Length: 394
Length: 122
Image 1 (cartoon, chains in turn blue, cyan):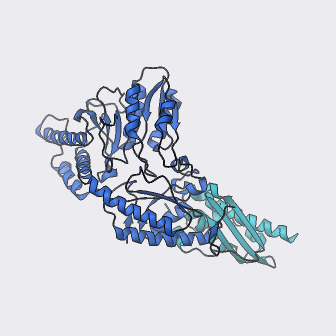
Image 2: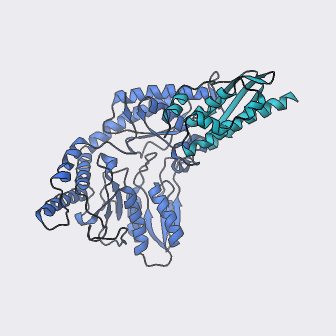
Image 3: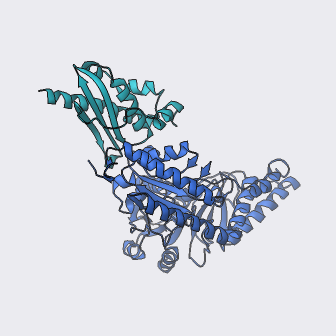
C-alpha cells in the first residue's frame, strides 16, 4: 500500500485543476501583456483568476500580486516593507517558529540593512502571546510578521488579535498563510491583515506559483524589476496556466473546506489517540485546540526520527521528520525546540500531514507499520531495554 | 538520497544486539545530538570472534554500524584499528555528504571498544 502523509510538504495536483490549466499551455498561450486577441484571451483568464483568489480572502482584485510561490512572497513582504520604509531605525517582530523563508530573509535584513528583530516565543501549544507582542513593540517597529499556521506542528496563531493590535498601533502586519489557505477561513479585513503570502501547491494547485496580498495603501519596494507586469510591482511574464490552476485549486479548497476539515480532523484525531495510547513513550508536539486539522506531530522517545521516516518509506508511507538528520543540519527542528521540547525528543519527531484523499484504511495501515517500526528501532537502540520495556539516556 | 545498498543494510542490519560478557564496549555520541553508537566486541587470543552493536540514529548510522561490526569479526585487534570510516562508506557504495559523520562515529566506536578491551587487559 502507498500512503502519502506529507501534504504539508506538497500536495498532488487536483485533476480538475490540471484540466482547467491545460488549454492555457497550448491553445490560449498568448502573453497576457500582448494587445492582440491571443494576449487578450489569456489576460481574461488571469483577470478571472485574480478576482476569484481575491474574493476567497475578502480582498480586492488589485490587491493580489502573483509570485513564484511562498518563499518569494515572504521575501518580498519583508524586503519590500524595509526597502520602502524611510526611518533610520527599523524593527521587525516575528515568532521563533517561522518558516526558513522568513528566518533567512530576516538574517539577511539584519546583516545588510541593520534591521532589529525580536523573535516572540511560543507556549507549549505552539502559539505566540499577544501580550508578548505588545511588550516587544518599540517606536521603531515597522512590521510584524507572524505565520497564520505553523508548517511543522500545525499551531494556528492568534491572527485576529495580532491584526487588531497592529491596526491600532499603525504597524504593518504580514502573515505567511502558506499552510492555512485550504483549511482556514481567511478574511483579510476582518483579521486586519496587510500582507499575506500564499502558495498554490499546498492546496492541490501547481508548483511554482503563489501570491502576495498587499492591502491598498501599504508601500512596498519591488523585489523583481523589469517589465510592467503586476501593475509594475513584480516583473516577469505572466504565467497564465499556473495562475488559472492556482485559482481553480483555491476555489475547490474553499468549496470543500468544511467537509474536508471535518473528515480529515476525525481521521487525525483517532490516529493521534491510538498512537499515544498504544505506542509507549510517545508525545504529541503542540496542542490540540488550535491546530491545523491535518497535522499530527509526534515524538517517539529513544528512536531517531529519520530512521522511522526511512522505515515507513520502505513500507510505502511518506512522512517527514524534525530530526537534524533529515534536514542535513546538526540541529533538530527550531520549531519543535521552541515548544520547550528537549533536544532528544526533537530528534525523535515525525510529522504526519494528512490530505483530502487520506482514508481510514491508510491510517490503519500506517499505524500498524509505525508500531512495528518503533518497536524494531527501539530493539536496536542503546537507550531502550526491551525486556524491561523502559528507556534511559546515557 | 540513500542508495539501494544503504537502504538494504538499514532494512536488514546484521549484528544487532549486545554481547553479555563483552571483552570491550565502546559508546560514541549522545542523544541530544541525535546519534549514539555502541559497539560490543568479544575477543579470544587477540582475535575478534564476535561483534554487535546498538544504535540510536538515522538510517546511515544503523547501516554503518552493521557494516563496521561485520568488518570486525575475524580480525585481530591491530587489524580492527586499521578499519577507517572510508572503508565503511566504500562498502555501502557511498553516503550523502551530510551522513559521512555517521561513518566516523562507527570508526570511533570501534576504537573506543578496542580501547576498553585493552584497558581491561592491564
